[in-house]
Image (cartoon, rainbow, N blue to C red; front, side, top):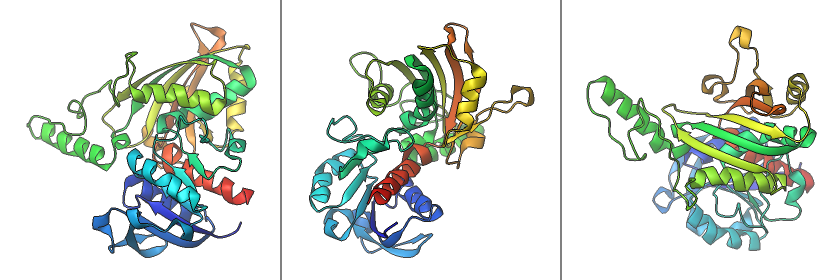
Length: 335
């Protein structure tokens, strides 16, 4: 692989830091590495696996000096800068939701639709909840055909960024010391609680987070006929999202067969030994590249044409940083 001039925008944030780590772990071919953050961080030094690097102002970046730019900043900033970068010949991998639903921008999960990149200089990274569910769902769709998908999520506070995790710690300590829990980043106190509300509500009663799963899965699978419904819940844990998934399939599905398929699928770790209490959990999924899949059984509702299973995945990795780096690897290999 040809060595690349890499830029990470939002390098001090949770996803930006994780991208740095993944690039190092996967031995990505780097010729030069530039890190960008807000204007107030300009000139400051940051310690990385590649050594100490000086931060630059993201608003004054020269994209002609970059081959690949990882955007890990809010959507409005991406909207203002993506075109500027791509016109300079720089490939942008955007982690925001800004371009995910644009028909002219490929939405990529490398294990599923790498060919959709084509010659695009702007590539969208999917929502973390979608990315975790899509890996096993794609194998079911390919081999048995998906008719209906019902998902219930249990999402970690890290999905709301570093401030969300900090709030869980702070408010848990408050409760344990006899104080009342407060809330700033969430609609209600998160400590010892569940909140069935992530992102803003839409006219149909679903939240945007729930609809992202619908829109993105249909786009990535290139099939708008799959019926998908999702309920997203924030839970009081630090890292890794969990999802309970029920599907109805076009063909009869045999549990033993789909387990075998999952075991051979890159990006999946099967944890399905109920006799020994082995199943997916945030505790075991955190920090892993692979998505854990388990509790695999035929559905009591859809019978042999249905499957129920449980998934856990590190949403900062496969749901963000890892998937972005895998996309970059596809770009470099293609070149």
